[in-house]
Image (cartoon, rainbow over all chains, first blue to last red; front, top):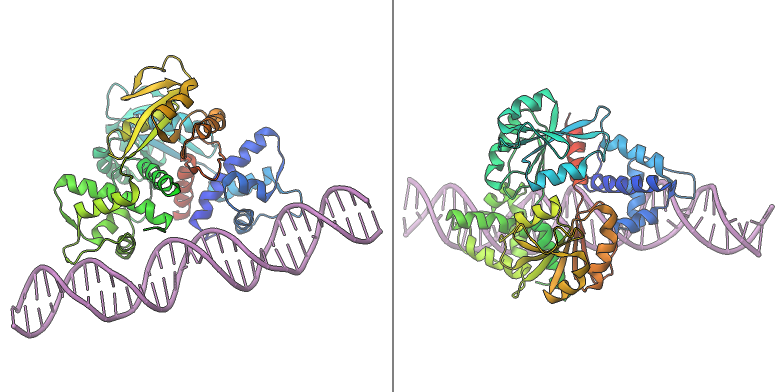
Length: 207
Length: 207
DNA sequence: TATTTAATGTGAAAATATTAACAATGTTCA
DNA sequence: TGAACATTGTTAATATTTTCACATTAAATA
């Protein structure tokens, strides 16, 4: 299972989200075309992704929801789980913590950080908020491996540096400031404006 | 300029973000490899994207920042601009409004909506919040073309239906509920958990 | 001014990603 | 039971995206 395409990883995560909903509803099996419709892709694509992760079924009643969830978990999750931290406890940071809380067993948001001393040392959205000055110490203490950056754009670069220095292995950057990190740190950047502008472009095209 | 690859559109939006920062700093020209480094891609890719939109320079001092911004604007923006609305004035909705506010001239967040009657008819993060029941009316009155959905997952489907019925042309879905819309509506979905899980996967791989 | 250097623009090749096509095989129902 | 059907798994074809390679040419330098 060594070389899965990046796109496939993204889709597996999305499939799992859907499968978990199915499971909660008591649906035990799902066809490739059902998954496909829910994700606006083709059934072949679903089958290929599932082939790539080595799961298969002899049944013609679709995939076993529970079994498929487990296989995807083996790809994405680690046995011990991973700790993440949200840096910046503003609206976006709080939204992420609230949204995420308890949704996945092998990924935890274990801490948040803020420069605002009012926020520091309080529990925000169910997760303790530490002062920014303790970042290095707490990241090590709590074994945090992933940093989610939601500070104002002008602070993003220094936060990223601190995270890297603290030994973090992955960064998810929600600020509008492009970052740059060493090779051994995985960086994913997301800008809402780009998503919105993509929608705007296609709305314009459809006219 | 009729058939630009989807990937290129996304990158153009990102280039513009960077170019606007350059402009603000007084930087008048930028090399393809500078843009490339900032976006973690190759210089060839930047040049090809720029070629595709028909901009070129005879100078060997890089692209004219201002001119390039204008060309990208011609691709992405419409002359009149587009109005968007945020549906759901919780943490995420407020974060988006605050983050977005005034960043682009041709895209405006013109309204927000919430079921909570406490929030309705107040100004939240600088944008007026209307009661959910007025959605159809206000979307038409304010000529809103794009809906950004940030309600709890269980309300997403009905909100999307209402938006479509109100004549919206594009939807940006931030809930974890997969939506389904008619052909003539452009839908973009984003799930933070997927981004986080992608980071987790690659962190796991790097070990 | 002549030479070297460094940048862009782009056709063609390579790499990735998606889709088509279909064999194999459970499942359903007459 | 057996024919018709529906679904998976997978190879091959197609489409898309990225990269290579290099011609061209402005800028810098000797």
